[in-house]
Length: 70
Image (tube, rainbow, N blue to C red; front, side, top):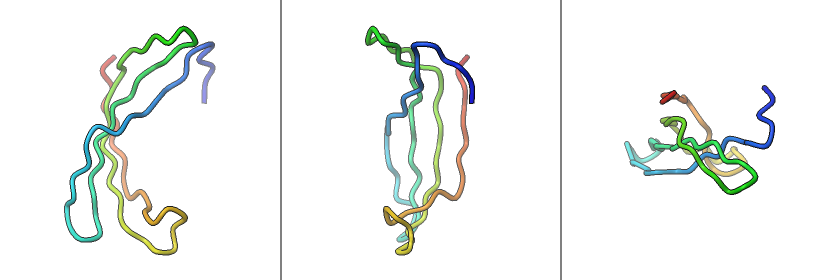
């Protein structure tokens, strides 16, 4: 896990692409946010999700790729 001190990572969905009827690609921007409201972009990620009726929110994650800027 790690100790970030007063900062914590925040994930924001940048764009969602529909790849097929049951699959989507979600592009995510990763920020490090501190108590003062400052925000610094530290990377991006791509998440591949698939529809599943048994899943709590209707989707489950098949794969995540993280691209770090720093």
